[in-house]
Image (cartoon, rainbow, N blue to C red; front, side):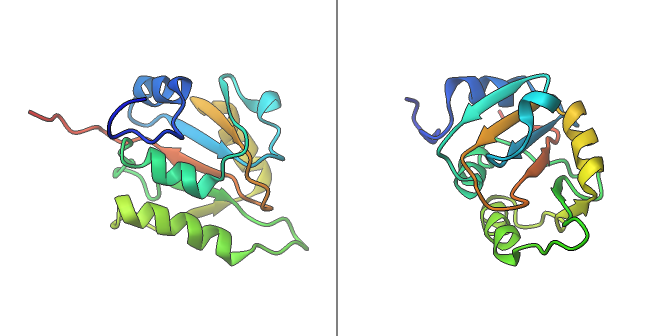
Length: 145
C-alpha cells in the first residue's frame, strides 16, 4: 500500500492511470458491460462500486478541461428509464474532487460501445445498477514543483 492512494486502486489500475495521456479515456464499466468484447486493455475491480472508484481515482486524475464534457454515460434505450440516483451519486464523487466539471454527457448505447472500443482501458467493476457505466477523459496533468 501507498500513502495517499486509496486501497481500492490496484497496482494494475495505478499503472494504467499513470500511462494514460491527455485525451485518453477509461471506461468504468458495470458488471453487465461486455468489456472483454470491446476493450483492448481490460482490468478487473470485481466487487467495487463505481461511486467508490470515482472517489479513489479522481484525486489522482485530472479531467479534460478542453472538451465539452470529460464525463460520458450511456443514455437509456427507448422504453427504458434511467435511475437518477446513479448519476447523482457519481456527480457527488466528481464534485468532491473537481467541482467545476461540466455536466455528464449522455450518448446513445451503440455510440457508447464505439467509444469504449477506442478507450485506453476498460475497468470492469462490481457495479450492478442499470446504465452504471461512465467514461472519464483524462486532461493535462499540471506540472508540480
